[in-house]
Image 1 (cartoon, one colour):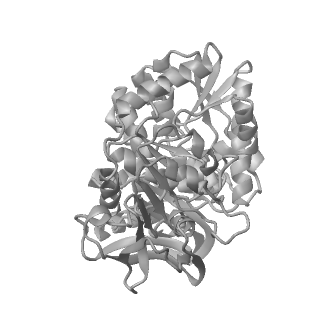
Image 2 (cartoon, one colour):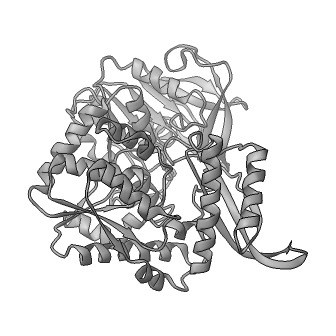
Image 3 (tube, one colour):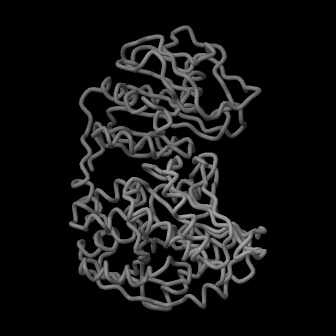
Length: 507
């Protein structure tokens, strides 16, 4: 899409940076992500947003920006968290370290009720994540919002530069989207974003990069890889879709995936590599090592299946990229290494052999993209399933016994969610294993068995999530069935942790 009058988002390393891009797109404007050092390459933007980041402005190697160049664009600028602190310094103010990190919910009290805070409540909840705070304010700066303690959390310099200490892009900031909308309303006419236009851009990019090369597309049956396979098929490239049963799939998963791809008219090759994966994973308990073993093994299996493949296509989404902090220019902190971000993948990327058309999208955007290609709703609305499969739902070492227990518990949980109508109301749900045995009583006899953890969350993008308050009768029924039908379980627990601080999966 043409880079004129778009919203340029400068990435200072926040885990939520791409969420800003996503929110802007939701509001109908085209947004694109850039590194701050590439400020001169952003074309002719209609607005610029400076993201948050994990660094302190006082760090010796703190990310910086060419302020004169930034001002030369003469467009509205919004600084978020680190971005606000950096702007305050650039305008002649100062920032100091706080004794306590402010993390989580906070109150927002607008001082000015127009512009950025038009139609915003007199008191609103926002989400904070910072350890520094603004100190001295420049002469041309005015405070436009405070928190519940009277501390400035939003500033304005002149007519077109704004700063907010909180994160409007996350759902925990209840009126954050409206605040972003208000900012965009100050920017004049901006380039539109439509998923149909983006699809055509993706197809053109795929054709240009692939040409007549042989492409291997790894599919898992999940939304991301399914949409990718259909997209590649529509683009007309020379692609072979491969589904690998690595022994870490859910109950009856392979049969369901085969049926879905047959329905869509996309041929796939099924490779049973379960013994190979489980042998490689045997005795390994470290979660990062497990992920890397799985990621590297996938490459081996793909290349064994199609030895002359020249490119590997993956359904990588932006949360995978940002949590892995795998971009060589990334300023983000690594949360966990995704299976599609192991070293061999990164090496292939440098060689130009990896195709990831969806890497700037979030799950709901991928679903919207899939709908434009006629993929049935029941396929698009399947709950997300992690690339490493059940390996990330079983902390510690893996055994066939543990995996079978997880499959049986998970099948019961999902079946009851669907029959009760709660499957469609949750974004992701699963049963995992807590690899610690506890004492129980079964059939008037002592049992010493594992516990299973049930988890159901609502989310829009996997970057943040909240647990679902499932009805007690439903949880009671699931628990009763698991305790009566699954050997090896004598305790059922329900996970009520949000993300952050927890992640959606256990590893």
